Image 1 (cartoon, rainbow, N blue to C red):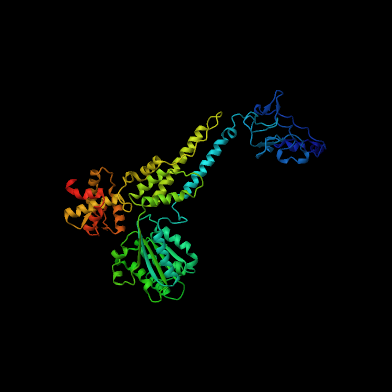
Image 2: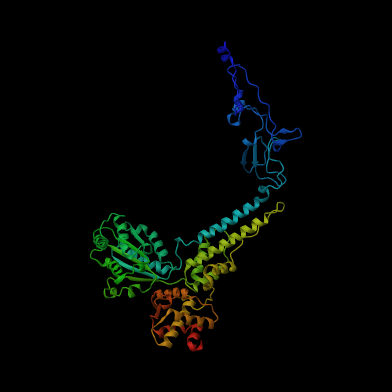
Length: 545
C-alpha cells in the first residue's frame, strides 16, 4: 500500500526561467498550460491616454524565435525599422524611415503611431547642419588637395634644372647605352634637387637603359663606411648569396665588374659619408670604372663641391680616374616661386595660397639656404593652420538651431600665416632681410665679408668659428639686422664650403672649428664691392665697428 502511494505522489513543479516554454503541452495532462498574465511596461514605454504600450500585443515567444507565418500583420516595431537615403520626396511607409531632400517645414522623420521616437524633431541636427557638413566637405577637399601637392616626394617634372638635367641625361646615354665606363660627381647644398633630378631622369630613361638596372644606395643608412661593399654585393649577387670575409668583398666585386655582362649603374647618395682613414674606400670605388674591361658607370652625390679635390688628391695624378663634375646651385627666389606655383596649378579651382604669401616665403628661404624643401614645408604648414581656423569658424557658427550658418568665401593663406610658421618652426634665424644677389644669399655674404675683414686685420689665413661669429654679430648689429646663432653660423659655413669659397677643419668643439678662404682675397673683394651693402662694410673695416 505504501509503495502505491509513493508511486502516485505528485512532484513539485519549479518555475522555469524562460516562460515561453510553458506554452508547450504537458505530457501528463495533455492540455496547454494557462498563459501568464501580462505585466504592464515601464512608464517610459507607455503612450496615449489609455496607458497602452507602444508595441503590438505581446507574442507568446521571444522575438528571436518568431516565425514569419505566425506573425500578425501589424506595423513593424522599432527593431525592424529601416533607414533609407535618397533624393525622392518624403514617403511614409510602415516600419521605414526615409531621409530625402525636404523643405524645412517637414520633419525629416516619418514614424508610425507605435514607434518610440517622438514625431517632433524641430531641433534635428541633420536638418539644421546639413549645409554646414557640405561646406566643411568642400573646404576640406580643397585644403587636402593643396597639402598633397605641396609634399617633398619625387615630383612629376623638375623645374629650374634644365641645364643639369641635360648634362645627366647626356652622361647616362653616352656611357650606359654605349657601354663606356665612367664616373660623375654631383655636388650641391641640401635641398637643391640633386637626388630628385637624378631619380626623375632614371625613371624617364628606364627603357633606354634596358637591362642596366641602377643600384641605388644611400650611404647615410650604412652602419659604417666598410659596409658599403657588402651592400653593393647584395645588390649585384643577391642578398646574402656572396659568402666571404669582409676584406674580400672589394676584390670579388672588382672581379665581377670586369666580367662580361650588361653595364652596371651604381648611384651612391651622400657619398661623403664614406670618409675613412687614408680614404681607401673612396679611392677603390673611383678606380673601378678604369679597370680593364670594366662595365661600371658610377654616379656619386654629396654636398661638398671639392670633395674629389680636397679629400681625394691622388685622383689629380690620374686624370682617367677623375670623375666629371656637376654642381647644383641653391634655388633663387624666382625659382622657388615657380616651383610652388607649379605645384598649386595641379589643384583645380582657385588657389589657396596668396601670391604675396608665396613671394614672401620664397624670399625668406632663398636669403638663407635656397632649400626648396623648406619652402614646401612652410607652405604646407600654413595651409594646415588656415584649414583648422576655417573648421573652427564654421562649427562655431552652426551652433544656432534656428539660423542657418552663412557660407563664407575660401579663406586663403596670407603673409601672417607664413610669418607665423617661419617664427614657430625656424625661429628668428629666418626673419632676415633679403637683398643682394639672387644667386648668393645675404647671410652668406655677410659671413664672407666678416671672414675677409678678419684675415685682413690679423694677416692669417684661418680663423676660428667663435671669432668669426663674434665679428659677424658686430656687422649685423651695425647694419641693424638680426644675425644667426653659432650653430646656424656653422651650417652657413658648410654651405659656403659646398660652393668652394671657404674650407673647414672640424674640431670636437664647434667654436674651435677653423675656417679659411679658398679664393684669393682680391677676387672676393672685387666680387663684393659691386654691391652697396657689402661694399660699405668692407670700406669701413673692423675699426668702424
